[in-house]
Length: 130
Image 1 (cartoon, rainbow, N blue to C red):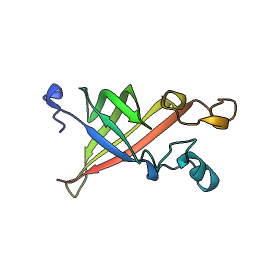
Image 2 (image 1 turned 45 degrees about the vertical axis):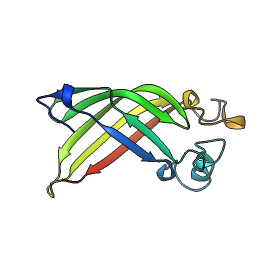
Image 3 (image 1 turned 90 degrees about the vertical axis):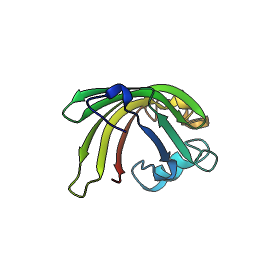
């Protein structure tokens, strides 16, 4: 529910299919979804539920609340842009950065940040029907 005139009454809840994660294709996609990465079989979804919303105007928003990945929940600030599409659906797009080790993504040999950076850019696009 997004209402620029009543940001306090707005909210966002997202359930993310972790099987949809794209790490660039091939072996990288397989590794990130495996037990040392996102452990998709055990944790098929990540969730974000806003606790507070801030309208920045012009369709731009900031949502803050817990982001849970792989059974670990941390507070996150998620900036996004909302816009109505010609067919009446609402599109949310955004980008934010997480530290993968905070969520135990990359365990065992992958826990070192020497090979894979700790900071990971998360990009999303969500469509809401009328």
